[in-house]
Image 1 (cartoon, rainbow, N blue to C red):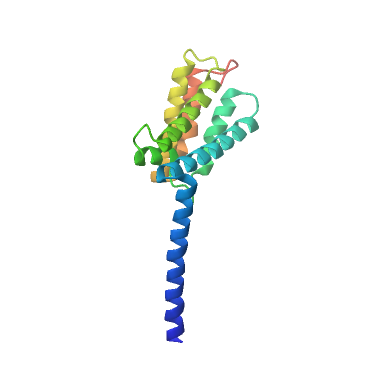
Image 2: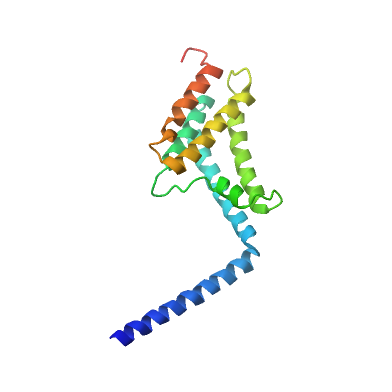
Length: 178
């Protein structure tokens, strides 16, 4: 039995090496480089994130204020310590700092889209400066992602929605009160 066990162990190790080499060769054939592979991953992840936020906003109804808060709620729900590993865009920007690389460009595009999405919603509110309001909310959004990774859902991330509500109430009070 020990001989069979060592033969099986050696055999499975060889299979893992062959599988790894095959997968690596296939990945490089499909993507050409690590950067292109990461760029494709970032693009796919960004699309999924956009769909999540668009669905949350649509489900919130026609009020841009409610849509903004729904976006924060949707992201808060994603911060699960068992699954959430941080913002893929920020990790990509840290690993691929060269702005000429596709992975970097895709990550910047994802971050820019979030800012634009929030900006489109704040432009529908009665704020004196919708662009400034969007930037404030984007900072809260980014803080939610950063602290969610580091400190989990029970850390400062749990305050993100309430902070967004406060910023909205200050910058664009509801016409008929709070």
